[in-house]
Length: 143
Image (cartoon, rainbow, N blue to C red; front, side, top):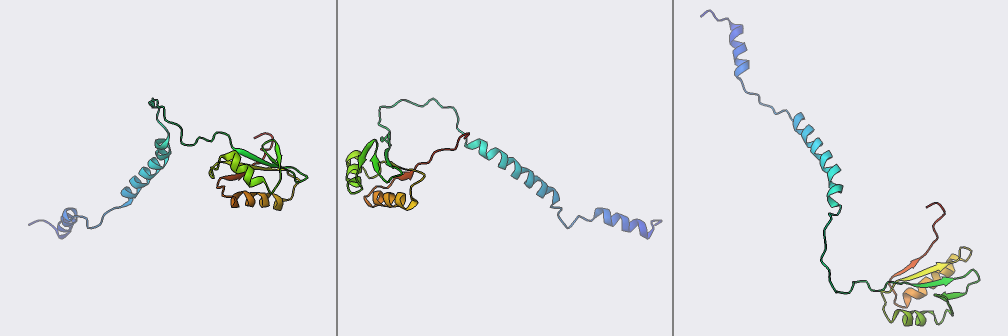
């Protein structure tokens, strides 16, 4: 009976469970896990050394050499190394591509030629049914 009122209050505080959750350690752990996954995810996508089996199947993309259409500074058109007229360009391309509309075609235009002329030739090629037409440019020195 000699317990004072202050001692009883102190015991109650010690025995009462906490009603709130401290989320700071949880957030810290989640941020560390996020950083770990961000660092390791690109490493997981890299290839693993695998000894692949050999096969006799033909490769999917068999056109190894693209067709090159060149436009000189005076406006002359060339299909590969051969001169060609603008009217005959699509027909000659079809013959060179063996009627394969997905054959790659590279357009090379002289840097001093009008950009509209290059786009006109590219439009003529795509309207002829070819779907893989690309412009070529020369890399600057040092790259």
